[in-house]
Image 1 (cartoon, helix red, strand yellow):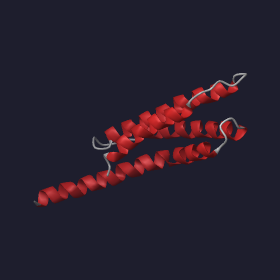
Image 2 (tube, rainbow, N blue to C red):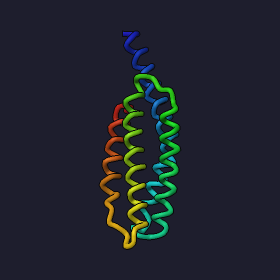
Image 3 (tube, one colour):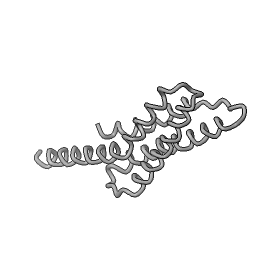
Image 4 (cartoon, rainbow, N blue to C red):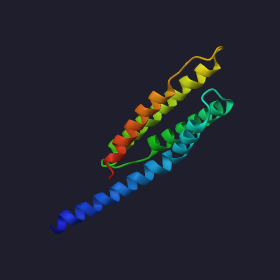
Length: 127
C-alpha cells in the first residue's frame, strides 16, 4: 500500500514536471495563436501575427526537441511536437497563400483544430 502511494506521488511529480516543460515551451505559441485568431482574416495584422506565431513555434519546437525527458513525458512531448509541426507547416502555407496575387484561400482553421487535437491528447495523459 505504501509503495503504491509513493509511486502515485512520483507520477504526480512527473505529471507536473512534464506539464511545466510543455507549458514553458508552448505558452508563447498559444498567446500568438490567440492573437492571430482575433485578427481580420485578410488583414496585415493577421499576416504579421502569423509570422510571429511561426517564429515562436520554431523556437518551441527546438526547445522541446532539445529537452531530455523521461519515458513518462515522452508521449506527451511527441504530441506537443506534432501540434507544433501542424502549426509550422500550416502557417507557412497560409503566409505563402497570402503572398499570391490574388491571395489564395487557405483553410488554416482546420489545421489549427487538428493541431489542438494532438495537444489535447498529449495533455490528457498529464491529468
